[in-house]
Amino acid sequence: MNKKQIRCAIYTRKSSEEGLEQGFNSLDAQREACEAYIKSQMHEGWVLVDKEYNDGGFSGGTMERPAFKKLLSDIEKDEVDIVVVYKVDRLTRSLMDFAKIVDVFDKHETSFVSITQHFNTTTSMGRLTLNILLSFAQFEREVTGERLRDKFAASRKKRNVPTW
Image (cartoon, rainbow, N blue to C red):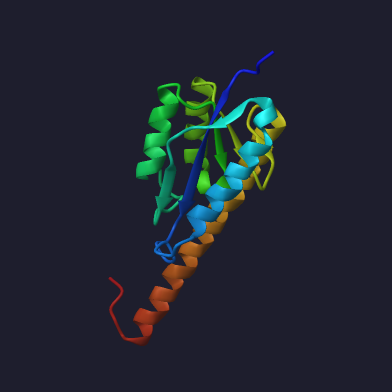
């Protein structure tokens, strides 16, 4: 008996463009690890879709990312059953955005898997754990923003630049 094919899309993201020009970069490393994971699930019917969804130089704090938008569009067209990511924060670093993403996934019966964190959005415990993790990711982003603002303020103060 043949198992139903489960179409898997890999989404990769790197927030800065630094290093993307290299022959083998962070996006390639994420993709390679995700491909290996999908291959390990072939016995469950998992197959990799033809399209690549890679956002290099885009923050996880926004959903305005070209490859991510294309992925959501393909999910809405029922072309993807599972989204595979290296880590949850590759998908988003915003709890509000995560809620929107899960909503789209649910509406189109799409699951997602983080290969390094072993999360599965089909269970209530998986959802709770992901929400907690994303809360920390959002906190980390906000703290980093505060540090940058403090650093700029200190720099302006040193140069006697008015702080309007």
